[in-house]
Amino acid sequence: MKKYSLLIALFVFFYSSVLLASPIETAEAFIVDYFDGKITETHNKLDSAARKQISEEQLIMIRGQIDSQLGALKSINEPAFQSYGGNDVFVFPVVFEKGELDITVVVSKTQEISTFFMAPRANTVPYQVPDYADTTKFSEVEITFQHDRFILPGTISIPNSPKEKVPAVFLVHGSGAHDRDESIGPNKIFRDIAWGLSTKGIAVLRYEKRTYTYGNEIGDYIDKLDLSFEVIDDAVSAAQYLHDNADKYNIDKNRIFVLGHSLGGGLLPRIDVRQPKLKGLIALAGMGRRIENVLVDQYGYLFSLDGEFTDDEKAILEELKDKLMTALSPELNETTSRDSLPLNLPAHYWLDFRTMDGAREAKSITKPILVLHGERDYQVTQEDFDIWKEALKSNKQAKFISYPGLNHLFLFGEQKSNPQEYYIRGNVNQKVIEDIVNWIQTVK
Image (cartoon, rainbow, N blue to C red):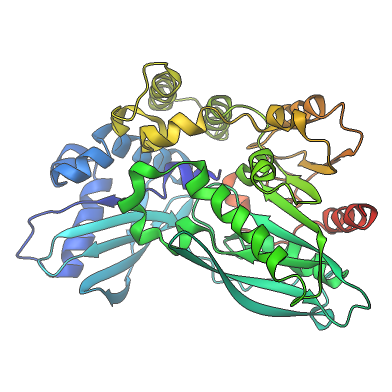
């Protein structure tokens, strides 16, 4: 649950009546107005549908987070441009005192702004192949599988010329719209894992997350969004794809494992209930606490990084707590307004999300499970890890490993972890790969 996914990378659909300026001027003027603090004016440009999706308070919150973490706006640079569906899409590199963002603004044919979103500046540093990966020892095949109408592309890494059928693992993402590699800046967490495991004789399926592949259509399904729609349905279908195509890829259908990261790790018990053929489960930084505790602690941690806790930050935290109370209230129902709920997610999502209690749901699991934790992880903390250990204490096939110096992405560092370090090139720690390989090899 990355900070930028929660606080910055929000998408908004809205319309404005700026008809005289050119598309690029319209787009740039919108950014200027927003960072000049003209929040009310900005919000008033939204149409009725958009105002239901994002409130004036949320615009203030996003702006406050940017100010806190990146400082003041310094410059808006020449944008990249493309035409898409008859719209003009501008991606502005925007420089702040302590960092950069890519701000995408989409201008329609009538010079109305139809979408904007913000994300950390795209990193041009190339991917670094980890030392433990030997790409001569496996091949990759592009595949697709389907759940309902949603067709997802993926990649299977297949060990070359094995003498016997191999075990297989499929990888389940954390929160947010992720590609098959779970790319964050120059880092590709799932590619590291896939290549590391396939080098050692284990087949791996990684796939695009539904919210990534169908991002432009998610608005059509927003009132149906829940954990099954976002994660579980496709994870179950991925497992079924491996089972149905086991002979084709020389996979031992009786040794299919699931590896879930962050939210994906917390949902392993639900995936296992839906797909009981799985041989074993692997949780990387799996959520153990309830979501209300995770969110409040993450906000508090991020606000503390600069050594200050401003009045604006206190107000944002109090607003979050108020919205969490609404989300947890027995009065919550399908008609509850999204404006009153955390992260602007619909009531249908919160009715499901608030029931998630990953580690405790795992109490009934008796099959092999491996739980891994990075000791510098501020998102899924030592408390989560301890909850997993307590929940699984009666499972004789549960194993727990904690890694000093590793963060939420299982990248090594020495400083206090922060969101910016996710954009520094690195690889999943080799010891993590070795431990996963060794554990799978012991599960027969």
